[in-house]
Length: 428
Picture 1: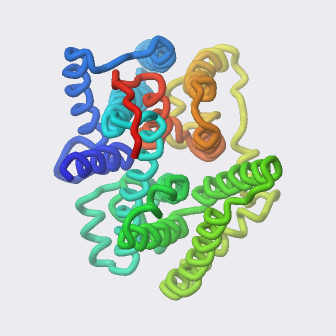
Picture 2 (picture 1 turned 30 degrees about the vertical axis):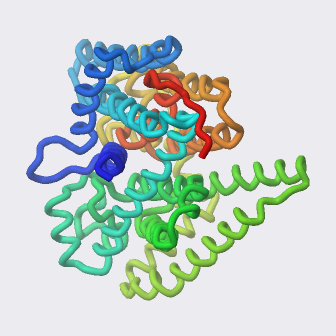
């Protein structure tokens, strides 16, 4: 029981990066400090087997940290804001991801395929914790008193924290230290990962199945109350998995009726929850208007106010050769350049050399995963995770956010930085 609670809190606190007003460290950094301590103990006991390709992969990320550090030191402005963000990914994100991989493989050490099961366990634990956080979103929406208390204890960074913001009425984050698109993506991954791990969840007790259904509904509401970016994650997942099952059905002439039934039930419950619970709660005309405008922006494809039109205006490259090659780290500050696009901001901050070094780490990491002999389903899930991040990088620099980088690095650590665990066949 205690070990399960420890895994739940470790995964949840690392991937949510909660901040408490009277504690100077966010939760991912606390997990990172714990991870480094455990890592040295296990290294001394020879319980860790570090693969050579894993070392090579993470050396790319370390090289990017050093590169951006040199940029900050030798730049005219000596701006360390970008370097601190990159360093946080390496010193907070990497140890946290390693610890998550280690405790999940240790949990399944008696099974024949502990790594595959660790992958699925990560999704399930993430689902349960994100569902718990989504409950605080609903409570904050229903109770202004709860919202005031949550915002005082769990401060947030973002542009939707002021009550004068036009989206403040319905962009409700609960205890999550993020607003808008960032919170929306966090909950979208929780919902998607819950569906991926549904075989484990539905095979449990009746009470757990009921709690899972409630968790799916809460996550759907939390996404609705935080922005449209999360819907992009879900749409990509639906497209990938439908394509996979269509190809599988065509190749085997079989259809997984149970999965189809679960998916249909989820869609119906989510729709009913949105119609009969969320929309009646939106009794503020201003909030309804902003929601309608958001969906209108998604549908619109051109024009100055359309989402795609706005994205087109955000893509540009500086004219000077020096800035294009080596970048200017001071541009990463908000409003220095008129773009939120992750690719554009990284290119302007680090130049073309840093740009390829940073994104090559993620591409090569998942290339190793696809060549590691994992099952077909896990390959599809890995493809979904990495494509999702590369897609929403068009919106904001999500690869530079600690919580999303940890999500992406956990599978890498499971397969490239795995503990030395004996594989004993498990007969049930």
